[in-house]
Length: 466
Image (cartoon, rainbow, N blue to C red; front, side, top):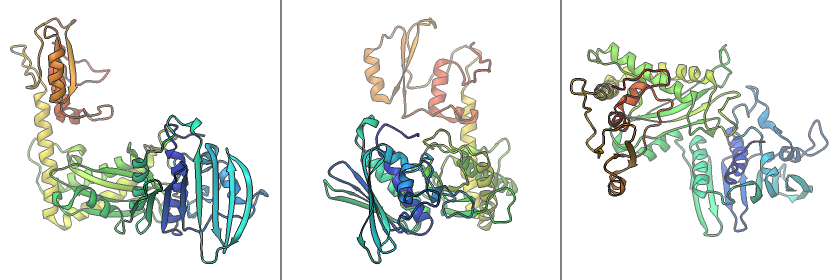
């Protein structure tokens, strides 16, 4: 079994995902999570309730099998006709991992007019399934979990992350209410986004900073498609802004993908192709300017929710989608509709194209600055660099510090003979997967390159050290 062991959050999320799958299938409208005073957590939904009858291939009740067997339950019927074809589940092992890593776990089921309960201890059945009595007009499942601290580095569940997870479920499941109640403080938070992705993005970035109206769309594959499975596709909302923070969030089958992946690359490719084609058709691109994907996306916020049959992820904790077909799937669904939208209102199209063109010009201008003055052999050093006196490259050191305040402290403690200080603004761009043009356009990378006297390069390149 695979799960994160920093804290018990992920085993709680497995239970939440089961409830979210019920909502995704259209059977639940409410998911409530309670942090109890004894350290346990309960997750309750108003879905159909986990089946309590005997498993078709085993004598044990289905609810028992679900919590004691890997990959058990209807959510693993992964054909396109199944209600759970695009279900979540963080680790591919289901709630059995939650049971295995818990001191105690109690499942209460309301189904077919009756209330049932089964209790587990350390992954094994402690109290077999029993009927508690009638429950007319009620349906759903409640799971209370007591995580076993010996399996985790930290026993405390990060409440803010749990709240973000529940908020994300509300965003992705329009009309479904999610709630978090903390018994100790009696604090309660709930989320409901009737407008889904669009209302969430608007709340996050604010309407005042919008360059053009937000564009939302969804596209899914039909039964006659020979390349992808019926129902595969995505929905998204995109916003272009001139200032403020940029929000980019993506999900696959309700699973958050904070590290992005091929579905994000597909949206990026589709939107870039549409903007580039529009700008060229309208004759908007100045001579010598080349628009790249990062120019279109420099001021683009989006929330993307993809549905992919049997998605492939990087590692078992599913933070990055790696399914190759997802890129083409999302790109195909995005390009045509976005290009139509741009041409439907030429003013909107021109504003977005102009934003990308200005970003391209800034990038190209910044790239041209990363060069040394060959004539004098003296580099054009960044203004914030506090240089050292020595010219002995084998001895000199460059300290990169975050912010001017840290730079001031470093200056006081340095040896000015051979130690130079360069304050940077915020976190430096992660250059591992960034394109070369994007590296040159980043001010902090530019300053580091100039201070060192070496342009950014790869392992196989032959940089100029002159």
